[in-house]
Image (cartoon, rainbow, N blue to C red; front, side, top):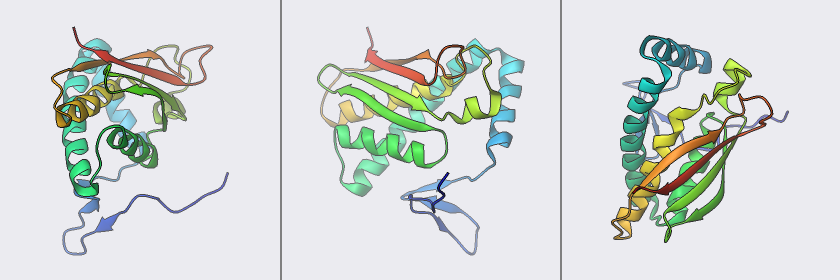
Length: 177
């Protein structure tokens, strides 16, 4: 394993201790801390209910992030989505690879390798990265809106690296009916 310094810009305010990447304040926490909290909430609410809550929150957050980052970096279209996948990958969630994206059709397919959830939880034989689904739809919909499209999408996890026989996660984004 080769180690390197973070590729994303991180600034820390010496007076407040607030971390900032690009135009947004950030939190830096250990992976086990985050995932242990995630699992505790899932156990209390049930995976289905928790996934629904995370979908809506993640959708809203991804929309906001893509809007701010597009403005800051002068990005548009597919470049916004690719920048988002790059930043997610650089922040330790896993390696997000856009296998397909078609803005005209409002579709995308994202592969997730080296999932933080799988590293922490192991092969639990179920889809455990559902937290990301709203992120992909929110990102896609912000990009579509910025292009003047009224199409909206939905995202779904179709496989997880935590499932037997699967080496990576897979997510699909399709138009909402």
